[in-house]
Structure formats: structure tokens, C-alpha cells
Image (tube, rainbow, N blue to C red; front, side):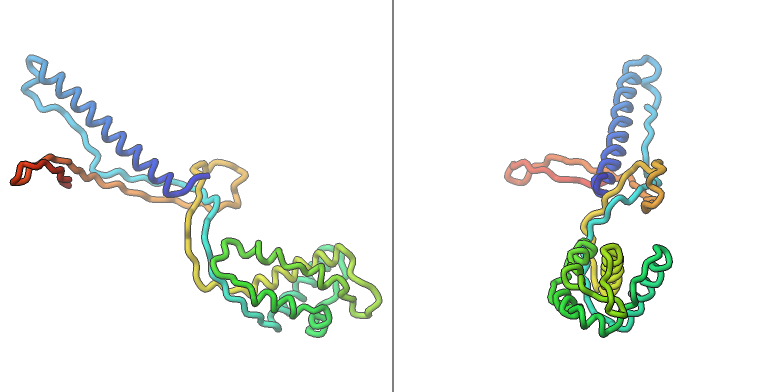
Length: 230
């Protein structure tokens, strides 16, 4: 895994090195022509690369970005989403988690947890999941009862419910701005295990330009260097 900028820098240097090698070969050939009895009257062949176009397949391994979030709790939407997921989990995993209500949220001190979330600073978060996963529902929701108040949630039910609540809370965060720091890529796009990764094609064109550094003298005889772009 390398930074995209480092990878492009490597390709740029490789193209320059190729151009340098071609020029060196042209110089050697020119010397041979100059020594030959007949070839010295001919032009020395020289090939240039006016532009180099590259189509580069890349695999995005990681994006280093900082996102600023705004947290706004929409209670009706939250409860609807949580109960929808509870119904789905109950069916898929044969559980009996009761739907939540506003009263249940109040009974288990849920709104105090929300106040803690609202007090936190969610500016420049690289990974919102890390912050959400730190919310300790177990400590404050452990004694949430079923609808008939006859039994408590099992540990398995509690863990499933905590996961549902965390995901629903995460959906209440809205990104308002983002800053991209680095993109990390893997040039190897042939691994079968990377089917879920993001693949892109990068089209790069390097156009040939030249420069020379010449030494000049000013009116006082002092030497100085000047870069001349061709």
C-alpha cells in the first residue's frame, strides 16, 4: 500500500530516466557516426517522446480524510429505523426483541446518552465508526425490560439491539464538509480477494518540455545561473 502521490512520482521519474537513456544512446551513436568515413556525412537518427500517455489501473486501499459532521436527532425517523431493523433481525436470527418506543427510551436513560453525543466535537473525524462504537449502551440499557416487564434481554439480544442502535445513531450524523489528506493505492489489481475494493483507471499524459541551465555574467563580471525553458 503506497500513497498515490508517491506512485505517480515514481512513474514520472521512470519516464524521465527512459528519456535520459534514449539521449545517452543518441550521443554514443553520434560519436560513432563522427568516426566513420562515410556515416559522418549523414544525420544521426534521434527519436523523442513528445508525449507519453499512460492508462493505469489502480486499487484504492484506503482514503485518509477528515470529515466534519453535524448531529441532529430526528426521533420519529430514529424509532422507525430501529424497529424496522429489530423486525428484520428477529426474523433472520429467530430472536424476540421487542420494538422500542419513546417511553422505553426515556425509561432507560437513552436521552442522557444523546446529550453526551451532542456535547462531543465531531469536527475533523477520520472515522465516525470509531466514535459511535465507543458509546456504551450496555452500561445504561442493561435493564431494559420486555413489553410485559417479566424478563430482561438475553446477552445475545442485548448485543443485537446495541448494534442496531449504534447504526441508527450513525445515520443521524450528516456530513457538512470533508478534507482529503491522502489516497493509498495498490498497483496490483489481480488479486481475487480484492473484489470488494474500489478500482479506478487513471489516465495520465506527460508532455515533453525541456530546460537548460546556462551560466551568464553580469556587467560587473559576476557569474550567475539562469534556467531557460524550451
